[in-house]
Image (cartoon, rainbow, N blue to C red):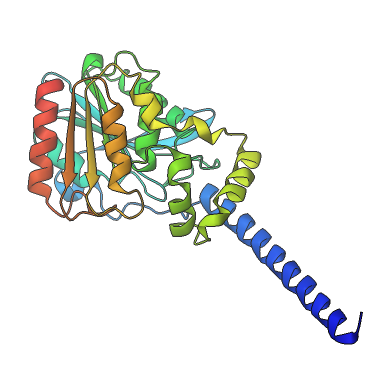
Length: 296
C-alpha cells in the first residue's frame, strides 16, 4: 500500500474512533439526563390561590416524599391526587387543582421521587414513580375527611404513566385523568431523547439500554395503552393538539384502548406545557363535568 493509501486508512480509523467516542459520550450523558432531572421548586404556593394547605410527608420504598394536602370543601370527601411530569414539582398542577377546589374537590399535590423536595432515586419515567402514587393514595386514606370511594388520580406526562400503573393496583379507585402522556415509554423515547437529552434519535436504543442496566427497570412495562385496557374505571384523556414532545396521536391511542366510560378532550392549539393556561375556562368546564359525573 502506498503512502496515500495508508493516510486514507488512518483517516478512516480516526474518523470511526471519533464517532465511537462521541456516541459513547452522548449515550452516557443522555442516560444521566433521563435519570437525573434538574430539580425545581414551586414558583407559587396554595396561598397564592387563596388556599390553605398542609405540607405532609410520607414514604415509598424508603424514599421520603413531600406533598401539599388541601382538604375537600365538599362534604362528600372527594379528593384528587395530582402528579407532575419529568423535571416538574408539586406546584405544576396547582392552578388546575385550585380550579377544582372551587368546585369542592380536595387535592394532594405530590413531589415525585427525585423531584421537588422529595428524596433521591433514579427517575424511571413512571415505573417506580407508580409506587409514589400508591403511597400518596395510602396517605389519603388516613384522612378522616376523605371518602376512600371518592379518590381519583390526575397525572401529566410522566405523571400520567405513573398514575396508569398505580391505577392497575387500586381496585377501589374512582377515576383517572391522563394529561399529555405517552402511549408507551419506548414509543415516545426518540422524542424524549431528542428533546430532553438533546441527543440524536438514533441513540434512543443504546441510551435505553444504559438506563435499564443502571436502574434494573424493564421499560417495556411502561405501556399505558396495554394497561388502560385492563382498568375498570372512568377515564378522562386530555391532550394538546400541537404537543411536540408527546404527539396527540399517542393520546388518542390510549383513549382508543380504554374499555370503560371515557371522555376525550383535545385542547386546540395547546402544546405540552400550556394545556391548562391556553384556555383555563374550557379546561375547568371539561374536567369539572367529568368529575361531577363520576366523583360526586
